Length: 210
Ligand SMILES: N[C@@H](CCC(=O)N[C@@H](CS)C(=O)NCC(=O)O)C(=O)O
Image (tube, rainbow, N blue to C red):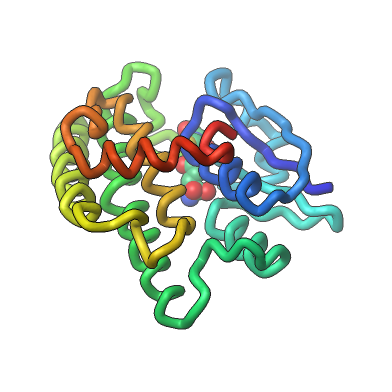
């Protein structure tokens, strides 16, 4: 059975937990304590040189070191339910939204949080190297995140899901992003009515509490 290297409080491994739950892929879980720096220690670094979670170790020992690898493997090894789109055009639409939500949403929030939180001093970027905070980047990240939430809210005005007519990985990434926004005091469910409606509907899915 695969092993998910996880940290319950962090947003990125939550994406993998929801995806594995939607696919019904059985796995065991190992917590990697990001607060005490366990991810920077020798043991975890040997497993995932990126020093980030999630990582998924398969039965043959292979390590999938990030969400992109986990999603690609899961869709190929367990095609149903399809989460990356079914037709060529659907796959393109899902990939486009998923990558926008990562770059314009999650990374903007990470930029805002990691460049301002005292606990993230010298940890402004993930990875083994120390990186100093730049306060101006925190401000820029917050503005980027706000702008993207406006885009997402307008996009959801007439839609049930982020991409295509079905639930997809883009909904997973967006739900994690919208919930994570709270760390920089953004509460899209209070300020953006279409995001609120979409997020409340998603809450019916058991995977969202994984
Ligand atoms: N591209 C990676 C990003 C993973 C990532 O940034 N994970 C964070 C937790 S949300 C982490 O491991 N942080 C370690 C650190 O803060 O040094 C993915 O989505 O798989």
